[in-house]
Length: 166
Image (cartoon, rainbow, N blue to C red; front, side, top):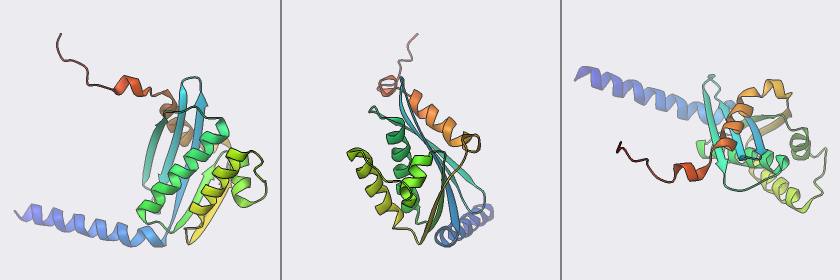
């Protein structure tokens, strides 16, 4: 019984520490989008201030260009971070286009890209502090791997549980 109480107490302390640290400290989000003949995938790798890593692969049920996939990944990541209550964020992406459009260095010309940019900027404005940085592809390998994983999932494969009959 004492062990259970100690575990509950330790868990409560961890949750409290996480909640208190979530909003004040800077988190880092690595994003990547993958669009290929197999599908569109998004890769999100979130790094907490303590160094914990959360990776998420997303398989999209629509075709997208590479730039659209990059924006989809950024937007999905921003939504996850906002849901966690994070206020300070640094995004790292290997897309020079996306990073420079968000910073206002490049303008979006295509109607669809303008909509992506406007929506992403609205999400970025919700943070107390926000920065986005373009990094070389070789420094974004985890997000790239997760995005490729997402692009390889075929939703039809998972539509039912296989039979256990032999």
